[in-house]
Length: 186
Image 1: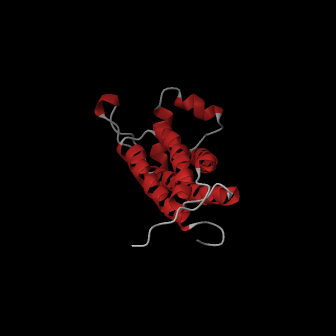
Image 2: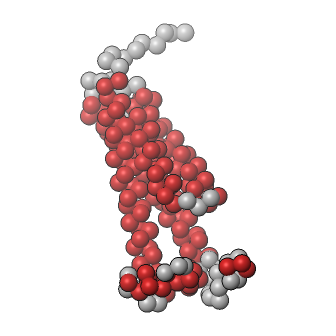
Image 3: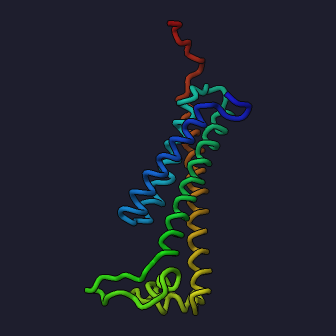
């Protein structure tokens, strides 16, 4: 037990890192479904906020410690979710070669990286009009617009996952043991 959080909360934070890695590989790399990732991050935070206190055996009479544990493990989990999200986005943004299936018109003619992502967004249904409405006129303005959106999503992941972890701590509180259970000496 440290001065601010229990060891169980730190263990839960590492479990949260593992959860974030699993969800990131599943929903950003294998089947790229960003909304699922955005839903699973706070749910993971909720579980980690509870688990950190359960793992630490935190008592009901210490609500401050319960919320510190939930906040700590939730914040580590949240930052990991956001960092993995941004890393995957950076990977695909930087290396997009412009490949498109022949049935959809074949590969884009563009320089690999941001230019191909820009051309891909323009080629989407209503893409040119939507980009023009957002003030995007070239690759540089597109890059700024794109990363502004991704950073907004990262902030959403951090905030919602941390708040969900605190909610997990709040839900743990009434079910926490009143007194510390003595373990038998073996």
